[in-house]
Image 1 (cartoon, rainbow, N blue to C red):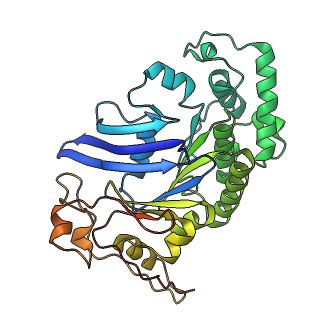
Image 2: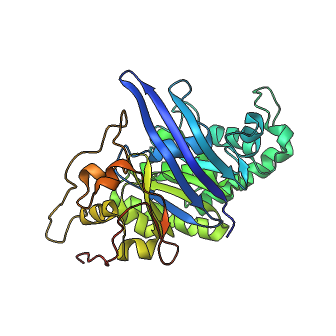
Image 3: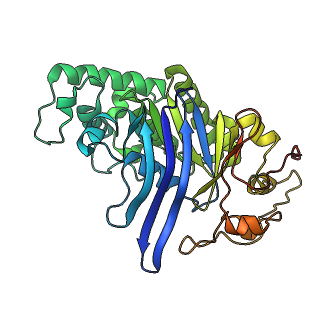
Length: 344
């Protein structure tokens, strides 16, 4: 299968007061057409940095890309002309659902103003010439009408009641779940090939989370859109993802189809993550030790200080990816092969 998105050897550093943090360390990732890929790991493992590196919106000055490739349909976005990437890829072919729907809208403009401003530059009806970032460019009247109808149709698809009336409202007049539905609609409106969803249900309560996940899954299946879904919640990943990639301290640990990931995880870190889920009797088991500092991180496999199976090889040499059965990949010198038993 030809990959829609292929990340190879991506290295990203952040300059801090205490030194240079190696936030992404030679990361590899693939997303195929129509595939929902879950990116999971503990907080601080680099999930959001990866999403922002793909989109080209890392904070200038603080972040620097040291190497690697981010290929979209074969084109390396890191080396392409920035103007072309902004016009044709960012916000159009690849869109973004942010983590917090409460701070994603300006509080002083109506929802219609903000959505139609997006459509003025990123509508699928706009030619590349129409995408020039000038605030003085006129919005063609006929395209405005067609785009507004498309907005109303999409708001109905994401189950916003009375969409024409909803557009006239200010963001604070919507609940958190409705605001996240609006963000999903805005990500879908340019008709993208890929949506990057950065923990889009974190700020919502569990019942609304379930509704949003079902809605997102149904919409991407209906429209054939690929999704890179970042989350620290394994239950969420199980609900929506076709394949799961595990990150730890800026390195990929394991990648597998969802069924294989939960039934036969091969990396010790993955097993520890799954064992950390609460049991039916309320027991919570954590992972001993601490996530290493990314300023002067440990050599070799970054998980080795917390791993029960670590050897001298793990402490000195980073494991290369190896393929197991059924498109199951793992970066480990000593992958585990016994199926896991999870309490029901």
